[in-house]
Length: 211
Ligand code: GAR
Image 1 (cartoon, rainbow, N blue to C red):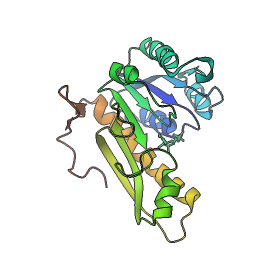
Image 2 (cartoon, helix red, strand yellow; image 1 turned 180 degrees about the vertical axis):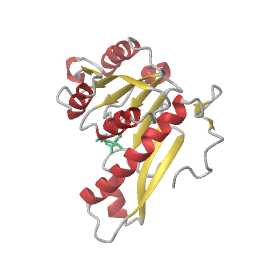
Image 3 (cartoon, protein in one colour; image 1 turned 90 degrees about the vertical axis):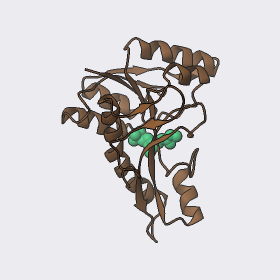
């Protein structure tokens, strides 16, 4: 089966959605072979172990530089020869070397309707702007932070009484729906980043994705 390595930093609820999808045979026959966290106490590592998946803590603080950390991360990942590397709440900026190494097989999920609200604190910023619609995006990772081509998005309506916590929860629920779908598409070979550049060949998808 196609091998998937998942990188996390925290709770790992998206990781759990992927584990569950694999359990229901809804991950394109793929298998999550390892979960790596830069935060040794990340709850997601427990989720991995519980599911019988190799869980690796790789504390970034033990490395002198971003380059050194990414070098170690590349080594750990490559031991598993993954077809796909999935960033699921991995809160580290990756070096160009890392991105190039896994180019075209590196997916991320971001809690906004990209290109809106790249970076951090997306829910608070969306609320402050008074937007009526917010959401999440799965995208291929390129060297431009949160700027790679979008694969799939899900939108939520922002309610009058939404606060940061409630909005975050709504968006999270959508993340758990769309990330397994995007991963499945990739592992089924339906979703590719073309070699000549960040063009997305996803012909079977509806033009607007899942909105
Ligand atoms: C998710 O909301 C994900 O979109 C976000 O971190 C959260 C991780 O939650 N990622 C980013 O902000 C990336 N810049 P989880 O650990 O429960 O999956």
